[in-house]
Length: 173
Image (cartoon, rainbow, N blue to C red; front, side, top):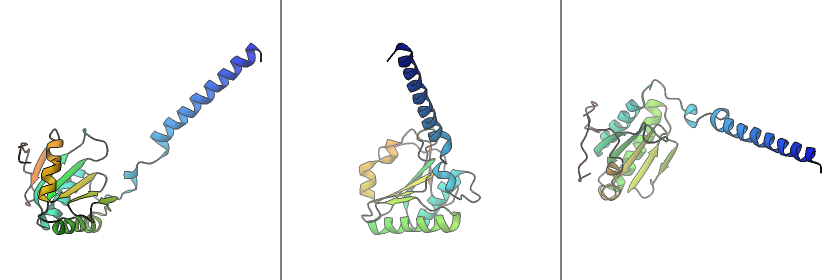
C-alpha cells in the first residue's frame, strides 16, 4: 500500500469517526424526545403547584412532617421532592396509593414508577417532575433525606395550602 492509499485510508477513517460521533451527539440531544414530553400536565404550568398538590393529597391521608424540596438547579432528574411520614407501613401504602390515583384523576399525571409498595417502609412515587418519598418514622430517621438535601430550598406543608416559607434544618430531621 502506497503513501497516498494510507493517507486516504486515514482521512476516510477520520471522516467516518467524526460523522458517527456527530450523529451520536445529535441523537442524544435532538432526535429523541425527552420522556417528560409524553406527559399531559393539563393546566399545571409550574411543577411547584404539582408538588403542593401531592403534599395536600398526603396530608388528606394524615401524613405528617411534610416537606417540599426545590431540587431545580441541584439535580436533573426532578424539579421537586416531597417527603412525608406515615405512622405505619399500612398508612404509607395508603398514602402512596391515594397519590397514584389522585395525581392521575385530578392532574392527568400517571407516576412512571412506584417502588417499595410491598414493604411499605419507604415508598417512592416517581412522577418525573416531582418525586414523593413516603416513609415510616424509623426509616425516615435512618435515611435522613432532609439532611442529605440540606442545600435545597424547602418549605413545610401544614395543610392550609399556603407555603410556610423557608425551613431551617435541625438535627431532628
